[in-house]
Image (cartoon, rainbow, N blue to C red; front, side, top):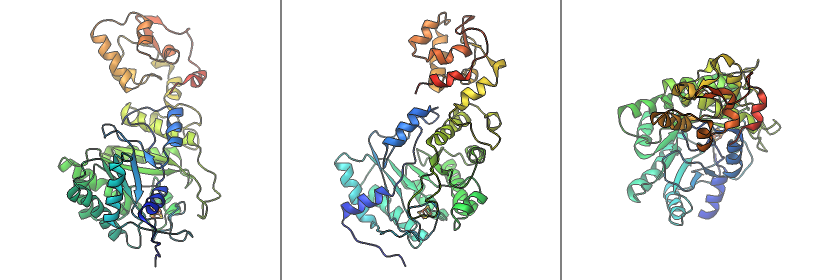
Length: 394
Ligand code: SF4
């Protein structure tokens, strides 16, 4: 039986937000290609607050657990049942009021509600839904709400979540059933975790719900999985379950858990996964095109797009006046927005001078080996080198 302590509301808020780990890194641009320092800064800075999805109201989102009690025993988790730690829980009404208080004081513009499973995951999911229902219907809160779907949620709960929240997420944690079994022996990969993602996709296809879509998250580096395993699952879910985005959370050992002695996953790996994910989702790359090492991992410390470009000298340089959008997106240093700006510029006339690129604040040293402007090379002839990696700006 789970024993809960009864601290006051402020203490509960402090306890149950500290359980909420950072999981959103990668900027607020859905297809943004985030270079390493940006993602690092975000990871260090966020604490319990999360980046907002593009288009959501500006201001901090507070991520809070309904309860940090859990009947499951996932090996990496601070809330696991057999970890010796005090537990507490909000009543739905308490949490709704505590959040509204933060909102009124300008400390939270939106809510990310997650939870341990308590002693009964269905009952806990019901209480999470009740909290959001109170906010929406009794208190008329119109702002952003992200609701976590607990493992094994019924279709009825999924339908209610889709009606109430702006975004929902169901975390896979690991890329396949074998890896999950090593981390979360009580969770069933397909039935408990992946099925809800497909069901939510179906509900989204049926009507205008969840303006910010549905997401998942992986704990990176806790189960010995490779980047290829993770990215093949995400690319499959982008294609088959209309997944809005995946989050990659570098494993951090937590004292008092069976994985406390496992080394933390370097943030560099997390950043490479975000970069590779963006290439798959917004830049027209396929999984087979990504450069992976023999173990199926993205090379550490290297920009995956630059790695691809260095291996394909036959594709460059491209003439900036003729390259298609798809081709421009393959140039290291040119992102989705920049490609659009260049195409707009071309509509009003030929780009005749490299100064135009500088005026657009393009990272000219980075793009130089890959482009010509009106037939003129921007860099000495010869293959671009990996030294470009050192010049990556944010
Ligand atoms: S089910 Fe969730 S909260 Fe419970 S131990 Fe596993 S990861 Fe932690």
